[in-house]
Image (tube, rainbow, N blue to C red; front, side, top):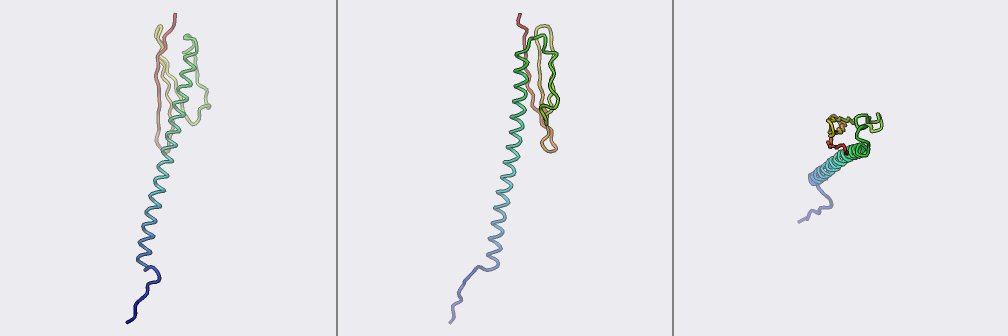
Length: 120
C-alpha cells in the first residue's frame, strides 16, 4: 500500500484563494475611492463656507450705506461661483451669499443669509 503525499495545493484551491484575494482587494480599493471622494467633497464644502463667512464678515465691517456697492472679485474664488444678493429696506439689509461649484457632473450649492441693521 502506497500513501500519496501531498506536496502542494490543487488547482481548485489556488483558484479559490485567488478569487477571495481579488474580492478583498477590490472591496478595499472601492472603499479608498469612496473615502477620497468624500474627503474632496468635504474640502470643497469647507472652502465654500469659509469664503461665505469671509465675505459676510467683510460686509459686517463696512458702513451700512456702502453695502449695496460691494462687488466680489472675479476669478479670485475659482473654481467657485459666488453670487451676492442684497435687499435693503430703510434700516434693514438682507444679505445672501451663494457659492456654487461642480463635483464631477453634479452642481453643489452652499449659501448663508444674514441681516444687518443700520445703527443710528
